[in-house]
Amino acid sequence: MIRILFVCLGNICRSPTAEGIFRHKLHQNGYRDGYLENIFVDSAGTGDWHVGQKPDKRSRETALKHGVDLDDLRARQITRQDFSDFDYLIAMDRENIRNMKALSPSDQYHKITLLMDYAEDCPGISEVPDPYCGGMDGFDRVYEIIERGCDGFLNNILTHHDLRKG
Ligand code: 4NP
Image 1 (cartoon, helix red, strand yellow):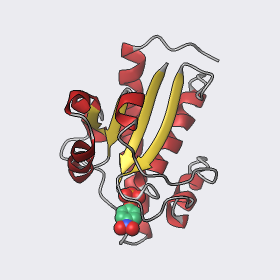
Image 2 (cartoon, protein in one colour):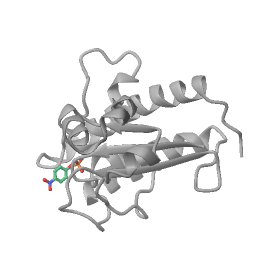
Image 3 (spheres, helix red, strand yellow):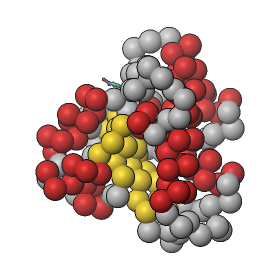
């Protein structure tokens, strides 16, 4: 079982979008995810302001334009236990990494990486910008960036793990 946790600040914009896109790509490629499968995908925020809420309406609308439904997701805050439970803890930006390391046991630091470190041919984009305070065009751009990161991350996972097709 490979367990993947996407992490941002509020868990209502970037990390649920990454969770939805990554899951969609898994399904498109013939893989299943979930507790009973050999890959499990989740997301969380380092902050607690939006716990229990659906993803931001702008993120849901943007994802839906691409056929990705985020409606069933609910925000939660990352816990110390997540660092032992998950194999990959994928941050959207460097502030997320700082916040995660403040909570994580240091022997789990190696699991924490930036999503855009996996992107192929995305020079100059090392972080997913926070779209929360901006306009709708920011959400379109963030979606494209996350999609590039998820493509690269999926290639990386498929290279390093022998996933069973569903
Ligand atoms: P996210 O965006 O980290 O991509 O979910 C944010 C959502 C809410 C807040 C900040 C960022 N906030 O400060 O409430």
